[in-house]
Image (tube, rainbow, N blue to C red; front, side, top):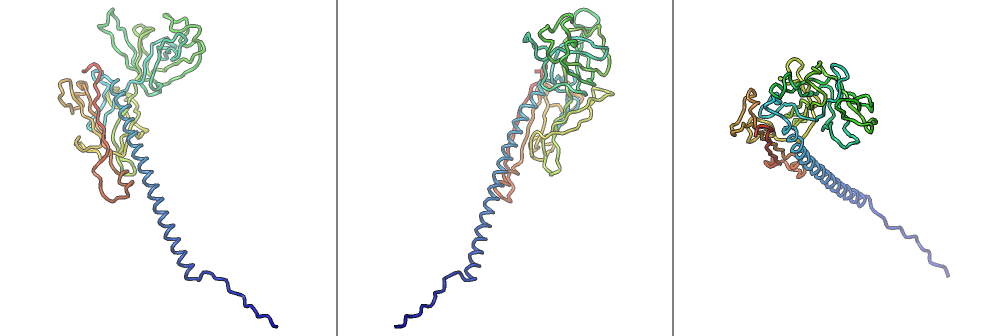
Length: 324
């Protein structure tokens, strides 16, 4: 008997149309996933921006009051002011006069001493361009003619040199156990009297700074901090400022209206009367500061084209020493 001939079966597969449909469906799914991932990425970036903005506002609430509480309006530390900015001499440290290395070079004790005494301390190390106030005993006994001599610092040097502020200083501020400690020398812009500026007199260090609102290259408004160089001709006038650092933002656009401005300063005297004339800066007893941030990050987080009226805000008041 002849065996039947088996014809091979064709394997089933996908037609071109089916493959095209699968490719299109996969493309749609990939596009949807990409959109979701991008939206989530944008959301998390915006939330991080909001958190960063709030953290910067807290920094402002810490840094600015610290600087303002140290100033003396009676001592003319405020150099210029308006509703959106203020420039003043901020206190950064203190020390005692230990020794005259020359007519224009003075030395101060180490910051860390074996005895545990703290005779030199600062928030930021003094630098060229800063100002030092050295107590002047005056020519007569008593404090009727005593004052503070303001001198610019032109150079600063530190070294573990036992010949700087040595143990032989009268009165002595260091001991043999401090010989390995780091000491500090400051070169002054002009010589001061070694008769009335006696060894042991207190010293105060100050740095001219400026807080203001500014519009950056991205068209957004920010709160900025700048270090300034004292006016060489007249120290009572504001000096030039540079190297702006961002403290907070973006904030709302800045205006002279304290009800809407992104940053504002309001100045009052002891009676609560508002001061707007810079010529009356010596009468300022308290300063009210306000910051309003934008909701740009919130709009980006929700991928909305709407304009949000909400945003974070911060307001605080600082009392000026010797004025309250």
